[in-house]
Amino acid sequence: MTLSFGTDGVRGPAPELLNPAFVTCLAIAAREVLSADKWIIGRDTRESGSVLSDAMLAALQLEGRQSATDVGVVPTPVIAHLTKVERCAGAVISASHNPWTDNGVKLFAPGGRKLHDQEQTNIEIRLQQLLADQSIASSRTQVAFPHPDPITSWSESIHRALDSRTLEGMHIVVDCANGAASDLAGPLFIELGAQVGTINASPNGRNINENCGSTNPTQLREAVLTSHADLGLAFDGDADRLVAIASDGTTIDGDRQLCLFAKDLAQRAQLRHGNVVITEMSNQGLREALHEAEISTIEVPVGDRNILTELDAGRAALGGEQSGHIIFWEHATTGDGMLSGALLADLIIRSERSSAELAKDAMRQFPQALINVPVNEQTSELPAKVQEVIQEAEDRIANHGRVLVRPSGTEAVIRVMVEASEERLAQMEAQRLASLIQAAIG
Image (cartoon, one colour):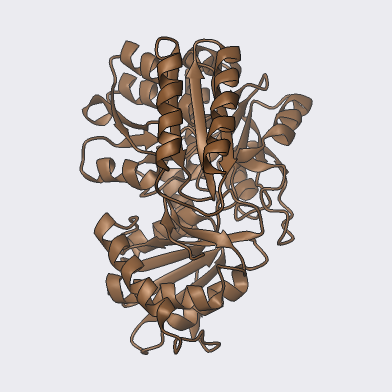
């Protein structure tokens, strides 16, 4: 089994598949295709991150023409910001919301943007050639220059996004997922004026995303309710996504955030072209709420690269995913959980309402059942037998909901989503469909 690009870079078990040799080949391929003379490299808190980062730094300088800057453990949006302002390429060693046993590589082209399709294809082709070349070996020698100050410029950009407003009077609890935000989130929100409590900010290399963060905000919910906080903010391992918790414990996922942000920007005449970019996973309730607010939607396949394509083309300046990737094109070139959190807190303060009231009134949430069906290896295609099973499910639920089945772009699973007018129907049909898919793939 080999690794391939998914919806956001390359991910896999480390070091079984994602190891220094693989990263070396990937770095050489990226260096050749992107033709950048300067690179900035960061990582999250995974145990395997340091050795993989060293391999990438060394490979980027094999010919001696490129310079590489090592910024250590930082959130993905920091790298995106630095590559934008310094007009260089970048890479983040991270598997985002995956467990510590995985790792990955996210690439940024000069200007802080995700790769275009052709760039990614060219890197993939060259990567396979290099992996087949037995003479390629990872180097232990690198001359990496530490960045003099990787955080200040990014932090200042979040301050600017608030238009000189502060978060004074807001009590916030942040869940750092024992990831890249662990040393940054608390101080940032204190600088913004909030009273801050912090949980899951003690990474040990193996506890990243473990029963915490945006994929499991149970601890955050308890902390918000116990401390009577105004808002809870949960990030994932590399802090490019946000799931929030309202003061009454209600989850404010990416769809609810997107609805709140879109309506707020529209009311202030700041929603470009009156459009919002959503994905096929977006809840039907979001579509209805935006339609009622006379806000148009542009729907794209899952993956922030697909959202970014529309934003880059100028058709909108706001887009996001249910998982919590929200992209504010006026402020950042990728999702930034801490930027989203700051803007959400600011929105709540300006509304003069509680986060619970805003979350409740934002949209009607259609019940969704989500199930991951394990497969032997990551794939981009659904077998014919699975497609037949999907069609049968769509026929059964046609008048009561919708079905979405897709191979994951980041894990070896097939994701099953059933949305229906009633939770019982969604759960029942999703379980049935997942079992049939499991049987179909053996």
